[in-house]
Image (cartoon, rainbow, N blue to C red; front, side, top):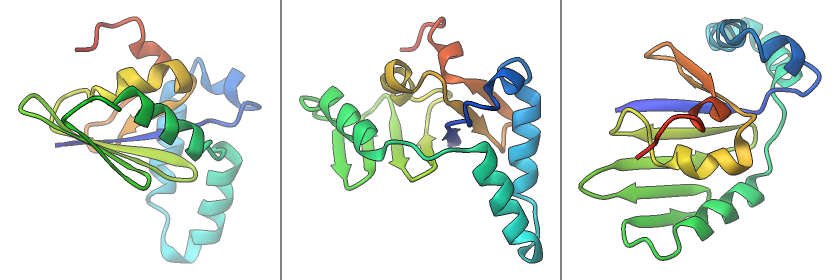
Length: 141
């Protein structure tokens, strides 16, 4: 099971980070390692880099994409695909989207590309990171 976190990078920082994905990954993974004593500093850094996402817009978009899908279910900000080919859960939070999937790449990525292509995606465990727009050029099943 893979877990991806998708973030919207502050547009002021985009010129710097668009060409240096490794820097974005290192900063966000280091924020995760701060101790509880350093929580306020970590939170301040996080909110300088990451900006809130439009939860309603993304929720409605994903819902409309899967209205007639018998393998799809929605519970508040949680979207679930459960079929013999894929088991994926997409959860939309205020500052990030979390995708847990049984596949290497969730089909939710295909849904997100048209409206979130400038967002940055990280699988911290597998040390995998990319912009969603970079997936647009690849074939997603």
